[in-house]
Length: 197
Length: 266
Image 1: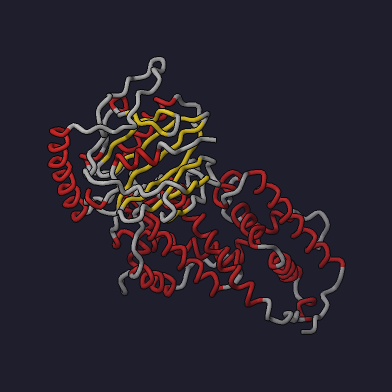
Image 2: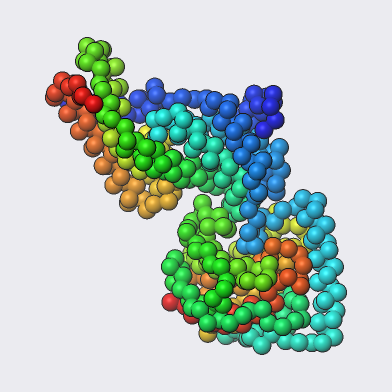
């Protein structure tokens, strides 16, 4: 990743020639991999940020994904599955980051809720409810929600990305949506209470 | 929260609002620095993805030249692989050529060690006898998983004192006959990015090799071989790959065949 060429590379990477660059990167062509990395980094980051809800963790997960991508690309057995394979690498890295962060999170105190949020508009309140509900989910349930309802993957594609049976993906999705629904309804029934640390 | 709201729609809209669409430049910069220190994996099993960089081509030419030299000596001496066997004559199946060794390994003493340790694959269920000193790496993803890599789908056995790694994996026949399966494997090689002289031959000409009590067939590539065996509705693959093109560093084909004789299928 040559300094100064990054923006140009990002623009060039959107020209639909990613497949060729992947094939060249597989043979050890570092310049080709730079183009691939620049082409995918934004969407990797978007997904990681949505799931992890933390900019630093998302950056680490994306960085690790790109390193693993470079390292293992020559052994990818089907070029046509590059996108799906990369998504799985990202999910593995997200899992690792989430686990690592969980150990640190255990030492944190309970986050105080700002009472003024109760006076905010309904949309803002809904977003806060969604956020709280989402953050109570496990990383597995967050991932299935993002893959399905942000990326728009089918259940089969979601299962393939996560390396789980379709039935498991379906049940995780069902659980995650129900958990979000419960979070929304619970918040709707009771006013936001201040929590002391 | 209003009752009856479409939770899924709310979630989808919220994701769109929350999405941060551009990664900070420092992510690419940091990844680039880490990649500078990272070697690409080129497992012995990566026969679909052999690099074609200039140094590789040079090594390939050297290896082919070496094989030709040793091959000449081999033909003069006419040794044979004790385990080469004739498969049962399947209906409408091409008869494998009953040649001696599929390629020529170094003519030296056994490096297979003492095959006293039995390994049973957690993922694929087969058993094989190994030398206790060999390093084993378990497959974590099944062979048929399209997102697997050669580093993750093969049980790998690094043969101590050589540059050879034996790999093993299995996948369902997928409705194909064994011969159709072999043809599909060869097609994958033809369509892959192996150097032009490493595309293998017509599957009908692939030599036979005994694996446990099952007949197998050997696909010969440059410096690399894959033995395919049908057991039940699965096809098992056993690979013979190396870190270098130096035949003297390899586990010999005779020793590879000896190891494969110990295989037992579930």
